[in-house]
Image (cartoon, rainbow, N blue to C red; front, side, top):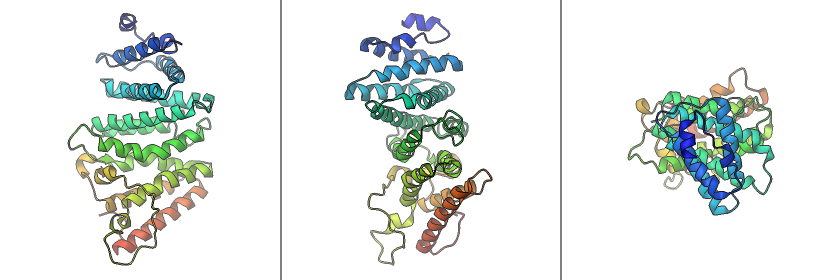
Length: 326
């Protein structure tokens, strides 16, 4: 099978990936990684990538033991980092998301948890890929486009996107970014451009027609990141002064790696910036998106209220009314 792959313009692996025999499937995944990691390999035509991902999706479908599922999910996601060319990695990622969105509603309740795990693995591997590319602006923009284009999991205008998939991504996004930054192979990685990486969620929160989707983004992602970056989060334990009227939940995650190593949009120029400055920058970006004409009126009101609440809390803590983070 390897020699056949090497001599073909596309990977003739579909029937092997979807085989009922586990050894055949395992060999197909390894040959696929070798095929795509060839430095001379260009981006596959969309039709080839679609066929390839259908095979991978059902290869994972047939993995039936927890340890096997975990190992296979990691192996498939790691292909993103095995591929030599960034452009090929990103197209492989696009194929993953388009296939996942398309096939999601066919997944039965007995299999859904393992696909949630696969999404988590790909989210983490995506962040490590962008970190390895030193958060290249073009790569980050392409990554966001993959998430928000029609067929992507965070597209506000695509009714085919399953809400449970967007919810899960909101639930795990910050956690996996924090993990990726904490496990960097580079001793001093460039800070993550957090405003850039959160832009798809700001846009979805602004434009979604579903109130539960908006609420999930606010509760699972926006409130936790503002809570982690807030001065009150840092100073509650050692200050004798009056407490802010904001009372962070005891379960609010700290995202320590992210808070210590993030910037707004330009890692090389900004370097890691303070959590207070970063929070104000994110709030300002959220406000700007809320002000755009495509934002739904009901969502705009909610985003403005969220902005006002956190700006007021931070002003109370810092005795400043500046909104520019400087």
